[in-house]
Picture (tube, rainbow, N blue to C red):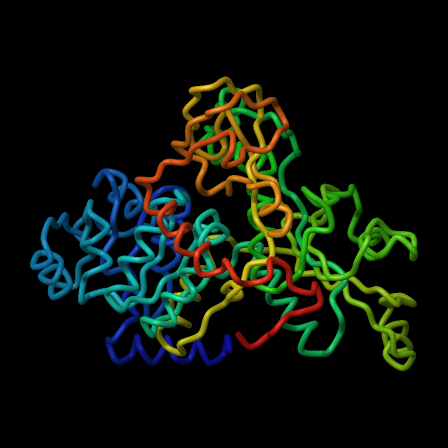
Amino acid sequence: MSDDLAAALALRGETENPVRVGLIGAGEMGTDIVTQISLMKGIEISVLSVLSAEHAFRAIEIAGLCADSAVVCETDRAVAMAAESGRMAIVEDPELVCGSDCVDAVIDATGNPNVGATVAMQAMKNGKHVVMMNVEADVTIGAYLRRQADRAGVVYTLGAGDEPSSAMELINFVTALGYPIVAAGKGKNNPLIFDATPDAYEEEARRRNMNPRMLVEFVDGSKTMIEMTAIANATGLLPDKPGMHGPNAPLDSLHHVLCPVEDGGLLSQKGVVDFTVAKGVAPGVFVIAELSHPRLRERMRDLKLGPGPYYTFFRPYHLTSLEVPLSAASAVLFGTSHMRPLETPVAETATLAKCDLPVGTTLGAIGETFYRGWAITREDSMKRKAIPLGLAQGAIITQSVKAGDYLTHENCRVDEDLKIVQLRRLQDKLLDNIAPRLPPTIYTAAQ
């Protein structure tokens, strides 16, 4: 596929018919995408939506592009004229991206679940493919967005390069070979500090050119929970227990630790998502598979991969936003996705209080002070009436909540005006009569 994609993009470049990307957001991820696409053949950013044009021109400068390669636009006609002159259109309103005839695929790089929900629906309504970097939105309403994409005849995909889609490459590889999956997951990059808050990470965030809130979303474990939920909902693999195990297991011992209890490991079942906090695994992703046939295990011994029956397959890197343009290109040129959810989710990223929350507290964004994510099965989530993490922003505490407790529909009221809340209501209605749990061994490579 990569060779085919390179050839197809080269041909688009030679014929001056590039894949046209509409990008929402020019923060850290969006700036990476602007830079990466500037180096590629056969693909371009035709329209870029930002809250401030200053941020857009900063991204353009970092990418090494000339300032006059882009122009600020406020109307559809102005966007079209920019395209005719070969310049990128800078707009504030995302609708000008989602509705433009100059856009083939829309990439959401905002990290805001509600924005991601709104952008995805607008883009699909206008016949655009959607590349969702906003995993927070995907784990909340991914099943609904998949259905809407199918109805609209467009591709809905998570972006290549993030840990979930990088893990999916290994999952597809192992599954195609017929090896049952025992566990799939990632190495965690940052220390795991559940009660982390942005004020303690401002200096580090500045040093790393990050938003403190976004850094804390990684440190407090929310991002890991979200990413593992995304893998679960795309495969049928499950969290083995609430929050998963997260052992300090180095690469060479992963298959000895993330394996069944009866074989000396931690797992109560096969077919799970999990992560390790041990150094040397991040920024990689892994799949642990079982090879029971003696002939295959003989070959694995010859290849210096051990006696089995469990083996770790490992990808030592993921390129985050740098690989995302490949998803846009694949959607437009081949109609394929790198990763998308199953029709029925099996897991949820629930919401836990970071601190005691009194009645009347209005919740801020993911990665701030009040709450964090926690991966659980959909069955468990339904029993608890848990608030999905993607619905927490703007919610109001209606009964006092202790630190570490779940936020639920009984102690918290979500903001019904948010688009993502409205779409989640529709998703829940669609899934009302569908069993909350699929067998953990279910995984279909060709989705």
